[in-house]
Image (tube, rainbow, N blue to C red; front, side, top):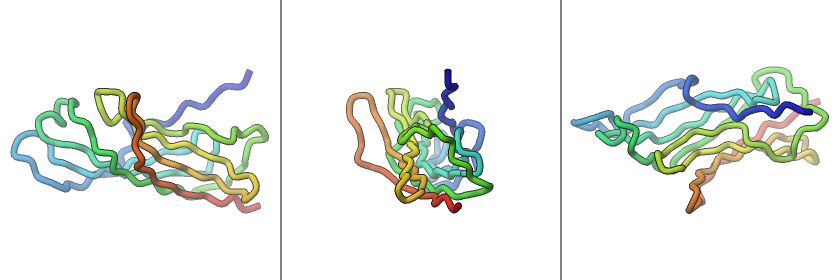
Length: 141
């Protein structure tokens, strides 16, 4: 039986945050950058920026973060594609709301072009979002 790689989480890989709006009470609104490694492809690192809601509700973890994000992935070491790499696999998940909203990054394998494609989307149980960001990593042989 194959062991499935769990999607990375941004909880312990924060690169840094920049304040976008100062709040008198509670945390400031920010854009934060997180780093994660592709769990199945050593040699690929991704960075995702996400807007974080501040204020009192943000400080208490009750605010819903906006669906504003960007992803950028690059080769940071040798890349070897596993023989049975799925065509599509979730590689990152970050909760952005108490109410089942999350940002996910899915890796797509474009075998024809020998390129890893990373697609970030905002997902909600009831209503999805058209917001997305894409990054590619060509695999050179």
